[in-house]
Length: 560
Image (cartoon, rainbow, N blue to C red; front, top):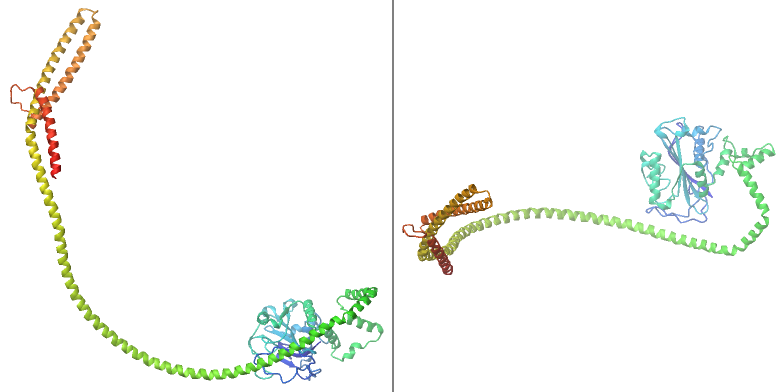
């Protein structure tokens, strides 16, 4: 079972009773929690002075009429009873939409504390107008519900309702929300990111009424209790007015409304059917009871596990105390480290000053060294130029000597070739002198051959003439000698062909003889020279001269 511990209202309410950022704190004034559960506090939070206590069992809110008492109840009921007529005094359900301005993103957050373990859970509602415009259309009024378990990273104090949210307000009663207000989407994104970074928060977001009611039941917050409270405060009177009935049927109706949902009449039928089934299964239920009684011994293990859980909680509390002690030590160590850091900063400043002076001295030394290096390089350059000039002269002399040596070899080869040419020319002239008689005999034989050919050609011409005359005479004499005349004609034709061939050959021989005479190979001054014999002799002399020429050429080759 949970009790209301704190209520936070942000940017919501009518114009006359508006909550900018209000927190109603009911913590730490009730009875001590009997079985406190270990809690994970903030890292640098102070140690608790005593055991956790329950919230105030009762409270009185003194406000004049129109101060916002009914508005507060309506907003609380809107978180715990979504989808109902969460208003008082019989007003319409649309009155909640009048609590939100066009630029508002209203928040109602309730922190509940468990009466046994002291564990807390925060449930809240966020609403805004779509498009930042107030409208009479209820579909443009956006609502959503969320829940989480407060711890390191997120709590009721640092809800991300604005862009900048302090972890704890510096002054009691001062809002920790600073900066521009977040929209519903921005609030949901910030809540989702916190849930991803801190899984122990168990962040849940819901936009459907029925699912939100089921989730409240899973958390241990029964929305039906708030429905009774809403009915008891319908006219802002006493709770006894709820049970003021005039007849038995009214009380029966009240009882039926208390145990069933008036929106779903099938639930009552299911309930009655369930009781009937249980009565029909009475024997089975008795057996089940016996079985349950026999299982008590086994449940002892659960008791032992609970004791082990208590020991684990004690160990966790000791570890948390040690952690807080370590945090205080770390804080003291941080102070000492800051002092050392300041000292080191002063040393760094002095070292930087020394480095600056060293840099100036190094620059002056660098300039002096550069001047010395320049002068040394100038002297070395002059010496190198003199050495280069001397080496150039030596290189010119060496190139001249090298060219002379190369030219000497070419001159020697030229002189050897000239000597060989002179020897070959002398050998050729000597061979020509030896072959001169053979060449003269050849020319004489050629003249004799030409004369013999002329004589043969003349005799052949005479024979041809005689054959023609004889053929003509025989052709005129008798027709019977036709075959003989044909044969004679054929022979005459052959003779004429031979004569033509001989005349052609004679012309060629005469031409060759004339050329031989012109060349000086034949001598035509002798009156009894025979060209045929001279030609044969010339042919033999030619063969002898060719053999002598070959021998001379071989001798010249050997000499070369």
